[in-house]
Image 1: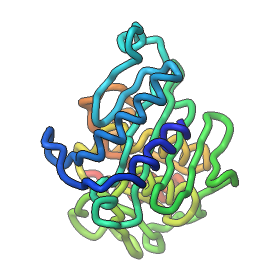
Image 2 (image 1 turned 45 degrees about the vertical axis):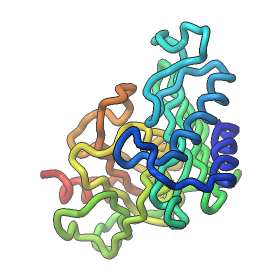
Image 3 (image 1 turned 180 degrees about the vertical axis):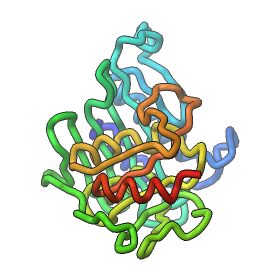
Image 4 (image 1 turned 90 degrees about the vertical axis):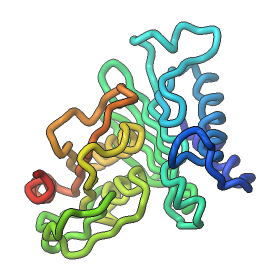
Amino acid sequence: MLAAADAVAQVLAANTDWGASGLRDGQYAVDLDADAVCLDVLYGAGYRVLSEESGVTGPRNSDSATSGSAAIVVVDPLDGSTNASRGVPWYASALCLVDDDGPAAGVVVNHATGERFVGVRGGGAERDGRPIKPSDATDLGQALLGVSGLPPRHLGWMQFRALGASAPDICAVACGVTDAWCDMVDDGPGVWDSLASLLILDEAGGASAEVFGRELCTLDHAARRSPVVAATPELLAAVLRHRRP
């Protein structure tokens, strides 16, 4: 999966076209280029792929695209495309290997900073090869909270940040840069935006939930989720109390 993220980095380094793809709102031409190189790498490894840009697919001349038992990689080739297009240094590739037991390995590579986050089920989480852990924050009134979307009101935080890319946002909680993060949209992004970083967070020792109690791991391309994550269970409960309708 790191090889797929590295391939995206090469696409970004060579890219000069930040125009729209013309296929759907909010999609850039470079999103399709990033998706194409991810698919090439992951197909070469024999995986099915669930991608934001291309749905559920598999290697050509293979039945893996329709085989429900084959392992699948959930991928957002470029999370934070608008940030990348405007030079805001907060955008990443996010990939999560899902097997019969759920998320097994997650990779988030922040292409703006070069940071590489990796989490393996039962094996912990790392940033650039070093173990990470969240802060010990429990009090929302003393917490730095990341958000995606417009908060409906002040939720009781000390300060908040809206950085514009869910995958590195959640990794920031996993390594203690921020204390919590909350999606403010009731039917938020697809699973590709969060699944890899949620595994990294869980392996680092953080806590996560979905605003409406839905499973955070789904392989339905059309499904939408609203994740909430925090450094500690106590802080997670506090954010959820304020965020839920």
